[in-house]
Amino acid sequence: MLFMDRQEAGRQLGTRLEHLRGRNAVVLGLPRGGVPVAFEVARAIGAPLDVCLVRKLGVPFQPELGMGAIGEDGVRVINDAVVREARVTPQELAEVEEHERDVLERRGRRYRGTYEPVSVEGRTVVVVDDGVATGSTARAACRIARARGAERIVLAVPVAPSDWTERLGGEADELVSVATPREFFAIGQFYADFAQTDDEEVADCLRRAAGGPSSADTPSGSPDTEIEVTAGAVRLKGQLTVPEDAPGIVVFAHGSGSSRHSPRNQFVATGLNRAGLGTLLFDLLTEEEEQDRANVFDTGLLAGRLTDATHWLRTRAGYEGPAVGYFGASTGAAAALWAAAEPEARIAAVVSRGGRPDLAGPRLPAVTAPTLLIVGGADPIVIDLNRQAQARLHCENHLAIVPGATHLFEEPGTLEVVTDLARDWFTDHMAPAHV
Image (cartoon, one colour):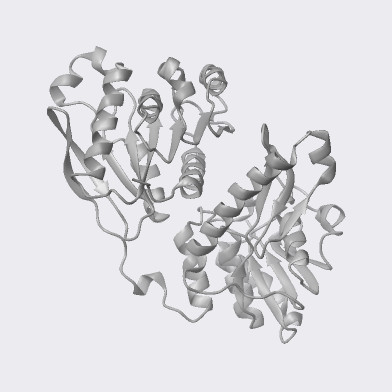
Protein backbone atom coordinates (compact mmCIF):
# COMPACT_ATOMS: atom_id res chain seq x y z
CA MET A 1 0.00 0.00 0.00
CA LEU A 2 1.45 3.37 -1.03
CA PHE A 3 -1.05 5.90 0.33
CA MET A 4 -3.45 6.09 3.25
CA ASP A 5 -5.93 8.20 1.25
CA ARG A 6 -6.15 10.79 -1.52
CA GLN A 7 -5.08 13.60 0.80
CA GLU A 8 -1.80 11.87 1.66
CA ALA A 9 -1.28 11.01 -2.01
CA GLY A 10 -1.77 14.67 -2.88
CA ARG A 11 0.75 15.82 -0.28
CA GLN A 12 3.37 13.38 -1.59
CA LEU A 13 2.67 14.43 -5.15
CA GLY A 14 2.91 18.08 -4.13
CA THR A 15 6.50 17.61 -2.97
CA ARG A 16 7.40 16.32 -6.45
CA LEU A 17 5.97 19.47 -8.00
CA GLU A 18 7.55 22.17 -5.85
CA HIS A 19 9.63 23.28 -8.83
CA LEU A 20 6.40 24.76 -10.22
CA ARG A 21 5.96 27.22 -7.35
CA GLY A 22 6.04 30.76 -8.73
CA ARG A 23 5.64 29.55 -12.33
CA ASN A 24 2.17 31.04 -12.92
CA ALA A 25 0.66 27.57 -12.64
CA VAL A 26 -2.96 26.51 -12.23
CA VAL A 27 -3.97 23.07 -10.94
CA LEU A 28 -6.87 21.27 -12.61
CA GLY A 29 -8.30 18.25 -10.82
CA LEU A 30 -10.21 15.56 -12.68
CA PRO A 31 -13.58 14.99 -10.99
CA ARG A 32 -14.25 13.33 -8.83
CA GLY A 33 -11.37 11.41 -7.26
CA GLY A 34 -8.64 13.64 -8.64
CA VAL A 35 -9.91 16.80 -6.94
CA PRO A 36 -8.91 15.99 -3.31
CA VAL A 37 -5.45 15.09 -4.65
CA ALA A 38 -5.32 18.30 -6.68
CA PHE A 39 -6.35 20.35 -3.63
CA GLU A 40 -3.22 19.24 -1.77
CA VAL A 41 -1.05 19.84 -4.85
CA ALA A 42 -2.43 23.36 -5.30
CA ARG A 43 -1.75 24.13 -1.66
CA ALA A 44 1.80 22.75 -1.90
CA ILE A 45 2.79 24.90 -4.90
CA GLY A 46 0.68 27.96 -4.07
CA ALA A 47 -1.49 27.74 -7.20
CA PRO A 48 -5.22 28.24 -7.79
CA LEU A 49 -7.39 25.13 -8.05
CA ASP A 50 -10.13 24.34 -10.55
CA VAL A 51 -11.71 21.29 -12.13
CA CYS A 52 -11.04 20.06 -15.64
CA LEU A 53 -14.44 19.17 -17.03
CA VAL A 54 -14.34 16.78 -19.95
CA ARG A 55 -17.19 14.97 -21.66
CA LYS A 56 -16.67 12.20 -24.16
CA LEU A 57 -18.67 12.36 -27.37
CA GLY A 58 -19.86 8.81 -27.93
CA VAL A 59 -20.99 7.44 -31.28
CA PRO A 60 -24.84 7.53 -31.13
CA PHE A 61 -25.39 3.81 -31.65
CA GLN A 62 -22.23 2.78 -29.77
CA PRO A 63 -21.74 5.37 -26.96
CA GLU A 64 -18.73 3.62 -25.46
CA LEU A 65 -16.83 4.42 -28.69
CA GLY A 66 -15.53 7.96 -28.46
CA MET A 67 -15.60 10.15 -31.53
CA GLY A 68 -14.25 13.16 -29.67
CA ALA A 69 -14.43 15.17 -26.49
CA ILE A 70 -15.59 18.59 -25.38
CA GLY A 71 -14.50 20.92 -22.61
CA GLU A 72 -15.41 24.32 -21.28
CA ASP A 73 -15.05 27.57 -23.22
CA GLY A 74 -16.56 25.86 -26.26
CA VAL A 75 -13.53 23.63 -26.77
CA ARG A 76 -14.05 20.51 -28.87
CA VAL A 77 -11.68 17.80 -30.04
CA ILE A 78 -13.09 15.60 -32.82
CA ASN A 79 -11.63 12.32 -34.06
CA ASP A 80 -12.44 12.65 -37.74
CA ALA A 81 -11.38 9.09 -38.49
CA VAL A 82 -13.94 7.63 -36.06
CA VAL A 83 -16.64 9.97 -37.36
CA ARG A 84 -15.97 8.81 -40.92
CA GLU A 85 -15.73 5.10 -40.12
CA ALA A 86 -18.87 5.16 -37.98
CA ARG A 87 -20.69 7.21 -40.65
CA VAL A 88 -21.90 9.75 -38.12
CA THR A 89 -23.78 12.56 -39.81
CA PRO A 90 -23.17 16.22 -38.93
CA GLN A 91 -26.65 16.38 -37.39
CA GLU A 92 -25.99 13.32 -35.20
CA LEU A 93 -22.68 14.79 -34.07
CA ALA A 94 -24.37 18.11 -33.26
CA GLU A 95 -27.10 16.38 -31.23
CA VAL A 96 -24.59 14.40 -29.16
CA GLU A 97 -22.49 17.49 -28.61
CA GLU A 98 -25.51 19.56 -27.54
CA HIS A 99 -26.49 16.97 -24.92
CA GLU A 100 -22.96 16.59 -23.54
CA ARG A 101 -22.46 20.37 -23.51
CA ASP A 102 -25.57 20.72 -21.36
CA VAL A 103 -24.26 18.08 -18.94
CA LEU A 104 -20.88 19.82 -18.85
CA GLU A 105 -22.42 23.17 -17.95
CA ARG A 106 -24.60 21.68 -15.23
CA ARG A 107 -21.66 19.92 -13.63
CA GLY A 108 -19.65 23.13 -13.72
CA ARG A 109 -22.42 24.95 -11.86
CA ARG A 110 -22.77 22.11 -9.38
CA TYR A 111 -19.06 22.03 -8.55
CA ARG A 112 -18.16 25.73 -8.63
CA GLY A 113 -21.36 27.35 -7.45
CA THR A 114 -20.83 31.11 -7.78
CA TYR A 115 -17.08 30.88 -8.46
CA GLU A 116 -15.83 31.64 -11.96
CA PRO A 117 -13.61 29.13 -13.86
CA VAL A 118 -9.90 29.83 -13.59
CA SER A 119 -8.32 30.98 -16.86
CA VAL A 120 -5.57 28.69 -18.18
CA GLU A 121 -4.52 30.73 -21.20
CA GLY A 122 -0.77 31.30 -21.32
CA ARG A 123 -0.21 29.42 -18.06
CA THR A 124 1.39 26.21 -16.88
CA VAL A 125 -1.46 23.79 -16.28
CA VAL A 126 -1.04 20.87 -13.88
CA VAL A 127 -3.62 18.19 -14.68
CA VAL A 128 -4.10 15.97 -11.61
CA ASP A 129 -5.94 12.69 -11.08
CA ASP A 130 -5.78 10.11 -8.27
CA GLY A 131 -4.02 7.71 -10.62
CA VAL A 132 -3.79 6.58 -14.22
CA ALA A 133 -5.08 3.25 -15.48
CA THR A 134 -5.99 3.33 -19.18
CA GLY A 135 -5.20 7.04 -19.40
CA SER A 136 -8.15 7.92 -21.66
CA THR A 137 -9.54 10.59 -19.33
CA ALA A 138 -6.11 12.11 -18.66
CA ARG A 139 -5.41 12.18 -22.39
CA ALA A 140 -8.65 14.03 -23.11
CA ALA A 141 -8.04 16.45 -20.25
CA CYS A 142 -4.59 17.35 -21.55
CA ARG A 143 -5.96 17.97 -25.03
CA ILE A 144 -8.75 20.13 -23.65
CA ALA A 145 -6.29 22.16 -21.56
CA ARG A 146 -4.09 22.63 -24.64
CA ALA A 147 -7.06 23.75 -26.68
CA ARG A 148 -7.99 26.26 -23.96
CA GLY A 149 -4.65 27.97 -24.43
CA ALA A 150 -2.32 26.40 -21.87
CA GLU A 151 1.31 27.25 -22.55
CA ARG A 152 2.71 24.17 -20.80
CA ILE A 153 0.99 21.03 -19.53
CA VAL A 154 2.14 18.86 -16.64
CA LEU A 155 0.24 15.61 -16.08
CA ALA A 156 0.69 14.58 -12.45
CA VAL A 157 -0.64 11.53 -10.59
CA PRO A 158 0.28 9.65 -7.41
CA VAL A 159 0.48 6.28 -9.14
CA ALA A 160 0.61 5.01 -12.73
CA PRO A 161 1.61 1.83 -14.62
CA SER A 162 5.28 1.46 -15.42
CA ASP A 163 4.69 2.10 -19.15
CA TRP A 164 2.58 5.24 -18.74
CA THR A 165 5.22 7.57 -20.20
CA GLU A 166 5.21 5.57 -23.43
CA ARG A 167 1.41 5.78 -23.68
CA LEU A 168 0.91 9.38 -22.57
CA GLY A 169 4.22 11.08 -23.23
CA GLY A 170 2.90 12.86 -26.29
CA GLU A 171 -0.02 14.43 -24.44
CA ALA A 172 1.88 16.54 -21.89
CA ASP A 173 5.15 18.46 -21.70
CA GLU A 174 6.00 16.80 -18.39
CA LEU A 175 4.81 13.65 -16.64
CA VAL A 176 5.14 13.30 -12.88
CA SER A 177 4.20 10.28 -10.76
CA VAL A 178 5.13 9.36 -7.21
CA ALA A 179 5.23 5.65 -8.08
CA THR A 180 5.10 3.49 -11.21
CA PRO A 181 4.80 -0.13 -9.99
CA ARG A 182 5.12 -2.99 -12.44
CA GLU A 183 2.33 -5.01 -10.79
CA PHE A 184 -0.56 -2.68 -11.58
CA PHE A 185 -4.15 -3.92 -11.66
CA ALA A 186 -6.24 -0.99 -10.42
CA ILE A 187 -5.64 2.42 -8.88
CA GLY A 188 -7.48 1.44 -5.70
CA GLN A 189 -4.98 -1.28 -4.82
CA PHE A 190 -2.47 1.42 -3.85
CA TYR A 191 -4.77 3.19 -1.36
CA ALA A 192 -5.78 2.03 2.11
CA ASP A 193 -8.85 4.28 1.81
CA PHE A 194 -10.18 4.60 -1.73
CA ALA A 195 -13.77 5.51 -0.90
CA GLN A 196 -15.72 7.19 -3.65
CA THR A 197 -15.51 10.98 -3.82
CA ASP A 198 -18.93 12.62 -4.05
CA ASP A 199 -19.99 15.89 -5.66
CA GLU A 200 -20.14 17.77 -2.37
CA GLU A 201 -16.52 16.90 -1.58
CA VAL A 202 -15.49 18.23 -5.00
CA ALA A 203 -17.40 21.47 -4.41
CA ASP A 204 -15.98 21.70 -0.89
CA CYS A 205 -12.39 21.46 -2.15
CA LEU A 206 -13.04 24.26 -4.65
CA ARG A 207 -14.66 26.46 -1.99
CA ARG A 208 -11.78 25.95 0.41
CA ALA A 209 -9.19 26.60 -2.30
CA ALA A 210 -10.97 29.85 -3.19
CA GLY A 211 -11.07 30.92 0.46
CA GLY A 212 -14.76 30.12 0.97
CA PRO A 213 -16.35 28.18 3.84
CA SER A 214 -16.14 24.42 4.12
CA SER A 215 -19.35 22.42 3.91
CA ALA A 216 -18.72 21.58 7.58
CA ASP A 217 -19.46 25.24 8.32
CA THR A 218 -22.71 25.38 6.33
CA PRO A 219 -26.09 23.76 6.98
CA SER A 220 -26.70 20.37 5.40
CA GLY A 221 -29.77 19.27 3.45
CA SER A 222 -33.11 18.48 5.03
CA PRO A 223 -33.30 15.43 7.32
CA ASP A 224 -35.25 12.30 6.51
CA THR A 225 -39.00 12.73 6.89
CA GLU A 226 -41.30 9.80 7.61
CA ILE A 227 -44.43 10.32 5.55
CA GLU A 228 -47.53 8.55 4.26
CA VAL A 229 -48.02 8.44 0.50
CA THR A 230 -51.58 8.51 -0.77
CA ALA A 231 -51.97 6.02 -3.63
CA GLY A 232 -55.56 5.68 -4.72
CA ALA A 233 -57.55 4.33 -1.80
CA VAL A 234 -54.55 3.26 0.28
CA ARG A 235 -51.91 5.06 2.32
CA LEU A 236 -48.34 3.74 2.14
CA LYS A 237 -45.48 4.44 4.52
CA GLY A 238 -42.44 6.17 3.10
CA GLN A 239 -39.25 8.10 3.75
CA LEU A 240 -38.71 11.42 1.97
CA THR A 241 -35.37 13.22 1.90
CA VAL A 242 -35.00 16.44 -0.08
CA PRO A 243 -31.75 18.45 0.23
CA GLU A 244 -32.00 22.20 -0.21
CA ASP A 245 -32.23 23.27 -3.88
CA ALA A 246 -32.43 19.66 -5.07
CA PRO A 247 -32.82 19.64 -8.88
CA GLY A 248 -34.80 16.42 -8.73
CA ILE A 249 -36.30 13.67 -6.58
CA VAL A 250 -35.72 9.98 -7.27
CA VAL A 251 -38.62 7.68 -6.41
CA PHE A 252 -37.55 4.11 -5.57
CA ALA A 253 -39.43 0.98 -6.60
CA HIS A 254 -38.14 -2.00 -4.63
CA GLY A 255 -38.13 -5.58 -5.76
CA SER A 256 -40.14 -8.55 -4.58
CA GLY A 257 -39.80 -9.38 -0.89
CA SER A 258 -38.32 -5.97 -0.09
CA SER A 259 -39.61 -2.65 1.28
CA ARG A 260 -38.65 0.97 1.88
CA HIS A 261 -36.12 -0.39 4.38
CA SER A 262 -34.14 -2.25 1.70
CA PRO A 263 -30.48 -1.78 2.76
CA ARG A 264 -29.31 -1.72 -0.86
CA ASN A 265 -31.79 0.94 -1.89
CA GLN A 266 -31.03 2.88 1.29
CA PHE A 267 -27.34 2.75 0.36
CA VAL A 268 -28.00 4.10 -3.14
CA ALA A 269 -30.40 6.73 -1.81
CA THR A 270 -27.76 8.03 0.60
CA GLY A 271 -25.33 8.39 -2.29
CA LEU A 272 -27.91 10.35 -4.28
CA ASN A 273 -28.63 12.59 -1.29
CA ARG A 274 -24.92 13.37 -0.95
CA ALA A 275 -25.00 14.48 -4.59
CA GLY A 276 -27.82 16.90 -3.78
CA LEU A 277 -30.72 14.79 -5.11
CA GLY A 278 -33.91 14.12 -3.22
CA THR A 279 -35.20 10.58 -2.67
CA LEU A 280 -38.53 8.94 -1.85
CA LEU A 281 -38.55 5.35 -0.65
CA PHE A 282 -41.99 3.94 0.07
CA ASP A 283 -43.78 0.62 0.41
CA LEU A 284 -45.54 -0.28 -2.81
CA LEU A 285 -48.05 -2.48 -0.99
CA THR A 286 -49.86 -2.43 2.35
CA GLU A 287 -49.06 -5.13 4.91
CA GLU A 288 -52.29 -6.91 4.02
CA GLU A 289 -51.57 -6.80 0.29
CA GLU A 290 -48.11 -8.25 0.81
CA GLN A 291 -49.67 -11.44 2.15
CA ASP A 292 -50.85 -12.26 -1.37
CA ARG A 293 -47.71 -13.14 -3.33
CA ALA A 294 -49.53 -12.47 -6.61
CA ASN A 295 -49.53 -8.76 -5.74
CA VAL A 296 -45.74 -8.75 -5.42
CA PHE A 297 -45.40 -9.72 -9.10
CA ASP A 298 -48.32 -7.67 -10.43
CA THR A 299 -46.36 -5.17 -12.53
CA GLY A 300 -49.46 -3.20 -13.49
CA LEU A 301 -50.50 -2.79 -9.84
CA LEU A 302 -47.01 -1.75 -8.73
CA ALA A 303 -46.65 0.69 -11.62
CA GLY A 304 -50.00 2.22 -10.67
CA ARG A 305 -48.75 2.76 -7.13
CA LEU A 306 -45.63 4.42 -8.50
CA THR A 307 -47.72 6.71 -10.69
CA ASP A 308 -49.97 7.61 -7.74
CA ALA A 309 -46.93 8.30 -5.55
CA THR A 310 -45.49 10.59 -8.22
CA HIS A 311 -48.78 12.50 -8.43
CA TRP A 312 -48.85 12.78 -4.63
CA LEU A 313 -45.26 14.05 -4.60
CA ARG A 314 -45.95 16.72 -7.20
CA THR A 315 -49.24 17.93 -5.78
CA ARG A 316 -49.93 17.20 -2.14
CA ALA A 317 -46.27 17.10 -1.10
CA GLY A 318 -45.62 20.33 -2.99
CA TYR A 319 -42.64 19.27 -5.12
CA GLU A 320 -43.93 20.24 -8.56
CA GLY A 321 -40.75 22.09 -9.55
CA PRO A 322 -38.01 19.46 -9.17
CA ALA A 323 -37.72 16.76 -11.82
CA VAL A 324 -38.76 13.23 -10.90
CA GLY A 325 -36.74 10.10 -11.68
CA TYR A 326 -37.35 6.41 -11.01
CA PHE A 327 -34.90 3.89 -9.55
CA GLY A 328 -36.17 0.32 -9.85
CA ALA A 329 -34.59 -2.81 -8.41
CA SER A 330 -35.38 -6.34 -9.62
CA THR A 331 -39.12 -6.53 -10.40
CA GLY A 332 -39.43 -2.91 -9.30
CA ALA A 333 -37.54 -1.94 -12.46
CA ALA A 334 -40.42 -3.26 -14.56
CA ALA A 335 -42.86 -1.17 -12.53
CA ALA A 336 -40.64 1.90 -12.98
CA LEU A 337 -40.51 1.51 -16.76
CA TRP A 338 -44.23 0.71 -16.96
CA ALA A 339 -45.05 3.89 -15.02
CA ALA A 340 -42.54 5.95 -17.03
CA ALA A 341 -44.35 4.92 -20.21
CA GLU A 342 -47.57 6.65 -19.11
CA PRO A 343 -48.36 9.55 -21.48
CA GLU A 344 -48.39 12.22 -18.73
CA ALA A 345 -45.57 10.73 -16.64
CA ARG A 346 -42.96 13.46 -17.30
CA ILE A 347 -40.18 11.30 -15.84
CA ALA A 348 -36.68 12.74 -16.27
CA ALA A 349 -34.68 9.51 -16.05
CA VAL A 350 -34.94 5.84 -15.08
CA VAL A 351 -32.28 3.58 -13.56
CA SER A 352 -32.70 -0.18 -13.22
CA ARG A 353 -30.50 -2.20 -10.83
CA GLY A 354 -30.43 -5.92 -11.47
CA GLY A 355 -33.85 -5.35 -12.95
CA ARG A 356 -36.40 -7.29 -14.96
CA PRO A 357 -37.30 -4.65 -17.54
CA ASP A 358 -38.60 -7.43 -19.77
CA LEU A 359 -41.63 -7.67 -17.46
CA ALA A 360 -42.72 -4.23 -18.71
CA GLY A 361 -43.31 -5.99 -22.03
CA PRO A 362 -45.18 -3.94 -24.63
CA ARG A 363 -44.78 -0.75 -22.57
CA LEU A 364 -41.06 -0.50 -23.31
CA PRO A 365 -41.28 1.25 -26.73
CA ALA A 366 -43.40 4.01 -25.13
CA VAL A 367 -40.75 4.97 -22.56
CA THR A 368 -39.27 8.38 -23.38
CA ALA A 369 -37.17 8.92 -20.25
CA PRO A 370 -33.40 8.25 -20.64
CA THR A 371 -32.91 4.77 -19.19
CA LEU A 372 -29.84 3.18 -17.61
CA LEU A 373 -29.86 -0.60 -17.14
CA ILE A 374 -27.30 -1.84 -14.57
CA VAL A 375 -26.62 -5.57 -14.40
CA GLY A 376 -24.03 -7.69 -12.62
CA GLY A 377 -21.40 -9.30 -14.80
CA ALA A 378 -21.96 -12.64 -13.03
CA ASP A 379 -25.72 -12.57 -13.67
CA PRO A 380 -25.87 -13.97 -17.24
CA ILE A 381 -29.59 -14.71 -17.41
CA VAL A 382 -30.54 -11.19 -16.33
CA ILE A 383 -27.93 -9.72 -18.70
CA ASP A 384 -29.67 -11.47 -21.58
CA LEU A 385 -33.11 -10.31 -20.42
CA ASN A 386 -31.86 -6.73 -20.17
CA ARG A 387 -30.34 -6.86 -23.64
CA GLN A 388 -33.64 -8.08 -25.06
CA ALA A 389 -35.49 -5.30 -23.25
CA GLN A 390 -32.93 -2.70 -24.35
CA ALA A 391 -33.59 -3.61 -27.97
CA ARG A 392 -37.22 -2.58 -27.49
CA LEU A 393 -36.44 0.81 -25.96
CA HIS A 394 -36.67 3.78 -28.34
CA CYS A 395 -35.41 6.34 -25.81
CA GLU A 396 -31.82 7.24 -24.93
CA ASN A 397 -30.50 4.20 -23.09
CA HIS A 398 -27.37 2.41 -21.93
CA LEU A 399 -26.58 -1.02 -20.50
CA ALA A 400 -23.87 -0.95 -17.82
CA ILE A 401 -22.41 -4.28 -16.69
CA VAL A 402 -20.62 -4.29 -13.32
CA PRO A 403 -17.76 -6.83 -13.50
CA GLY A 404 -17.91 -9.65 -10.95
CA ALA A 405 -21.27 -8.64 -9.48
CA THR A 406 -24.02 -11.17 -8.92
CA HIS A 407 -27.75 -10.40 -8.94
CA LEU A 408 -27.88 -8.69 -5.52
CA PHE A 409 -24.56 -6.84 -5.88
CA GLU A 410 -23.28 -8.30 -2.60
CA GLU A 411 -19.62 -8.37 -3.68
CA PRO A 412 -17.33 -5.72 -2.10
CA GLY A 413 -17.42 -2.43 -3.98
CA THR A 414 -20.11 -3.42 -6.49
CA LEU A 415 -22.94 -1.48 -4.85
CA GLU A 416 -20.68 1.57 -4.76
CA VAL A 417 -20.31 1.24 -8.54
CA VAL A 418 -24.10 1.05 -8.89
CA THR A 419 -24.46 4.19 -6.77
CA ASP A 420 -21.93 6.10 -8.86
CA LEU A 421 -23.59 5.05 -12.11
CA ALA A 422 -27.04 6.00 -10.84
CA ARG A 423 -25.82 9.30 -9.43
CA ASP A 424 -24.19 10.30 -12.70
CA TRP A 425 -27.21 9.26 -14.77
CA PHE A 426 -29.67 11.19 -12.65
CA THR A 427 -27.57 14.32 -12.21
CA ASP A 428 -26.81 14.37 -15.94
CA HIS A 429 -30.48 14.11 -16.92
CA MET A 430 -32.34 15.87 -14.15
CA ALA A 431 -33.85 19.25 -15.03
CA PRO A 432 -36.80 21.10 -13.51
CA ALA A 433 -40.10 19.70 -14.71
CA HIS A 434 -42.15 21.68 -17.22
CA VAL A 435 -45.84 22.04 -16.49
